[in-house]
Image (cartoon, rainbow, N blue to C red; front, side, top):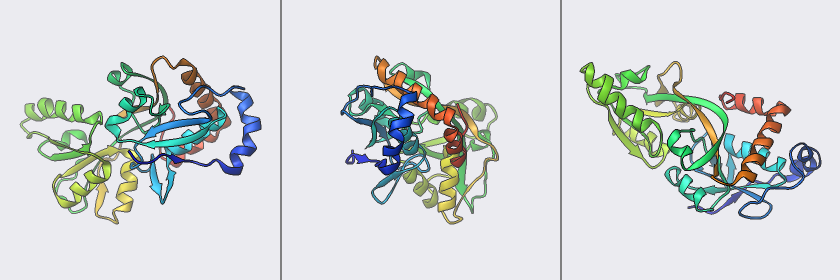
Length: 266
């Protein structure tokens, strides 16, 4: 795990603390470290969270800072591999997870979640690829890469064993990688033929590839709701985050932030 990075709210936070906090709660909720909201996230996942030098930027850090400020706290970030986020939360390494993580039944058995945005997946291929799948069904017969721990692994295996097998179109070979950037490198090097990723992240990856990678899906596939996760039993923090999110939405600024990153309100 990388060292903890702190997002400084600076003069803006100091100016707003006296006004916005009154709309949510006078007393900050109890957290792992007094005065801080420690947020677990994998900081290698643009545009949701990534480094610009030593600064943590992206949709989730902006959301985290806004929510923390409304609760009278400072947001700090614990850089954690995606498959280990729920384990870290339940081990009290941080207070919450805000990391582009879908709300899924198996996750809700372990932790509680607050819906905060909606998105879907996109398919990327190399620009010179012969096959450019527009739907998930067109992935049959291809080697598809994606990040470890994502919900699409099960969906692709089911698609391969069901539709692809029934139609005689060839199995989907699912290859998992530790990070999304490593998956993109596997695509560029020819180890996989397609890369499945969250739609807004896919657009940024394609733009940064300088024309070597293209998004081939005209619309998002496998739409899901993203969740802010809290350890089960931590009702005080769960309620405080809900109130802070409601206040953020009522300000009108949240809708602008969603539009900036190509996301929808949950």
